[in-house]
Amino acid sequence: MSERLGQKNWFIADGFIPPISNGDQESHESICVLNCNLEQVELEVIVYFEDRDPLEGLFYSIEGRRTKHIRTSWLKNDQGEQIPLGVPYAMEIRSNQAIIVQYSRLDSTQKELALMTTMGYS
Image (cartoon, rainbow, N blue to C red; front, side, top):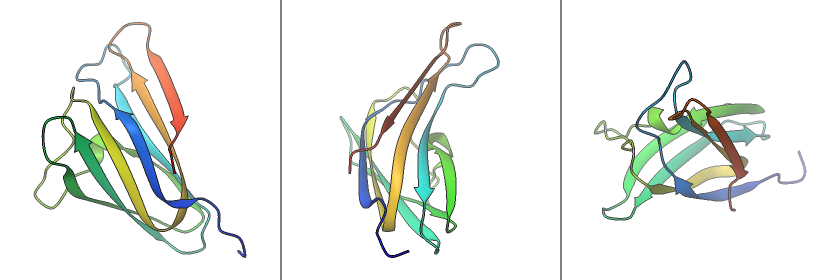
């Protein structure tokens, strides 16, 4: 592939994993990543909070020419630390190669669930 598609650094400013769910759908958030490269990419996610130091060391790999929806609640560092539920946060996604990042949230805290999605900021 001769042209570079995407960017290596992405930002999501509005993160919040709803602490409760209602009905069959679990409230969750996802980093939606498109890797158009032939090679596997390595991601690092850094999570920023209002009242504490960043959560670092969250790594994920995506094979070449693949897409992956990574639930933010699945991410853990080597110490087993995760993004807490019900706490506002923001994310920086770093990649060793250019990727495309979209962000989605399913909020099922009410019977009338809401789905929100937006492109990350590069």
